[in-house]
Image (tube, rainbow, N blue to C red; front, top):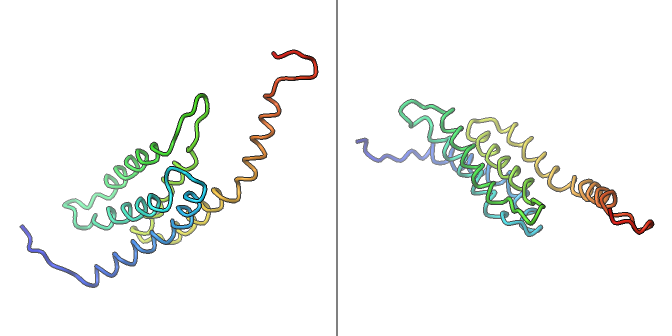
Length: 158
């Protein structure tokens, strides 16, 4: 058994990386919370921090097998994301939120592995997708509703 030691330099490195992961997903968490989604301001940062933290411990593992840790993270984050998906009759909601949770995990993983550029690109594109594409989705939904609506002019309800 190894004695407990504390490395201040490593502590600050971990604090920096986990803090960056936290900061990068906060806008998505904030928007999700404001929209009243089942996951938001707490879940997104926790997913990013946990992903970052798990990958930061890889050098201390016996084989340092990052691929297996990453595989477990992807599976676990998929489980968390599945909790955001809600079925309401024939409609399903929350799939974009679930995908955004996966993006939060990718952001945390990228930061941990030293790929801040990837984390930044994913964070910016996630916010853009979840915010800027909403009007386009609403437009498409309205168009689809109009096409699916029964014709009232002929009295035929088929």
